[in-house]
Image 1 (cartoon, rainbow, N blue to C red):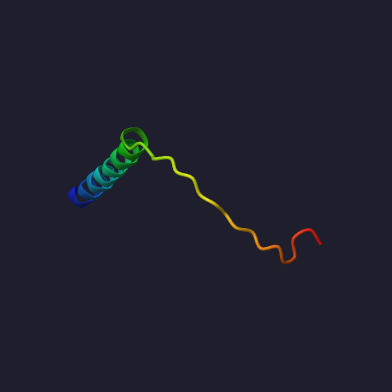
Image 2 (cartoon, helix red, strand yellow):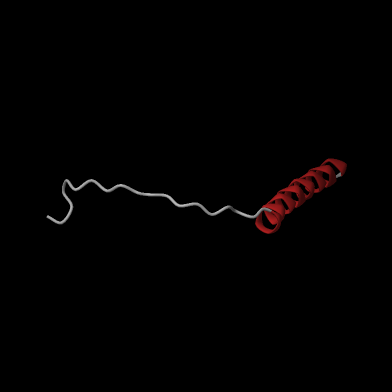
Amino acid sequence: MPTLTRLILALVLIGAIGYGAVYALANLVQPGEREYTVRIKKDGFGR
């Protein structure tokens, strides 16, 4: 039984670290804005 308890504790700990990382990325990191251009080939466009 102690092995099962350690396994569950380890999984909960890994999940908490993952949740914390996702929360930090969602709330603490501000994305920068920039312009970009997408070129479309005219070959086969509007056939």
